[in-house]
Length: 275
Ligand code: DAL
Ligand code: ZN
Image 1 (cartoon, rainbow, N blue to C red):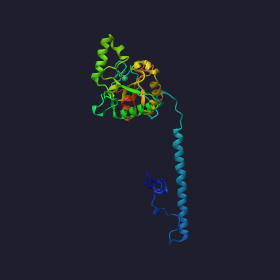
Image 2 (cartoon, rainbow, N blue to C red; image 1 turned 90 degrees about the vertical axis):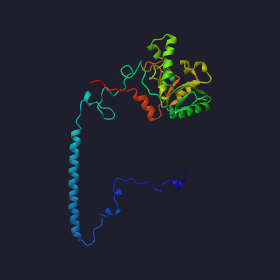
Image 3 (spheres, rainbow, N blue to C red; image 1 turned 120 degrees about the vertical axis):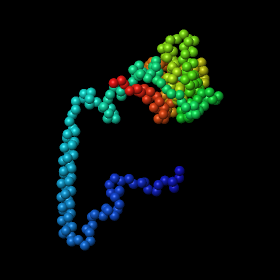
Image 4 (cartoon, helix red, strand yellow; image 1 turned 60 degrees about the vertical axis):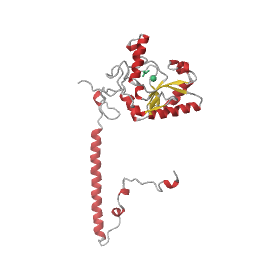
């Protein structure tokens, strides 16, 4: 960008005379050919009209304001949201238990379109959706500049992947569905389907991969302080309302409208309540 690219004068935006063409703004000079007294008379009549108009307008305005200044007692019918809509039980975020769309505390998610996935690991096996992939790689590079090596462990997962992880591992461990759901989402309900969620490890401490002890690594401490600058947030903090175990390694991207809607619309009622 050079000086020549900049506009020479700032563009004027005016809501008063600036919008009126100059030829129509010449009102102060008497028009040639008319006697001075006639002009003075016309001016006096005009001034009187203007005064009455202004006074009348002020009276009307005062009457309107006055009628609106009635104090309304704060009962439930007068409570409004910040957008001015009346508050209703549907407005607050529904808890996972009362949200009819959740399953064992997990919200439903559609699979990302495969064409939108981009590899973020050396062997290409870990993939995220384009916008999240770009920010993840930038975040990993920034961490690396400080001597911290983030490792992408798991990104996009299909429903079939999640089917294996939920049912096969549940059977191997002899767990019931509720127990399994504390650490794994049922197929169709994993943030990993979206292509916006990623499990991250610390290259220096692989032993704590996918373990709560990951929180003691330098990688986690770095992520806690810096992930938000790349629009990543922790999905399952300690004591989360979903009842999912603490997962310090699992981060989701909330950095564009699609990802924001994906995660936050899932948290409100999606089906209309029964009458
Ligand atoms: N571990 C998280 C809850 C998942 O399976 O998506
Ligand atoms: Zn995960």
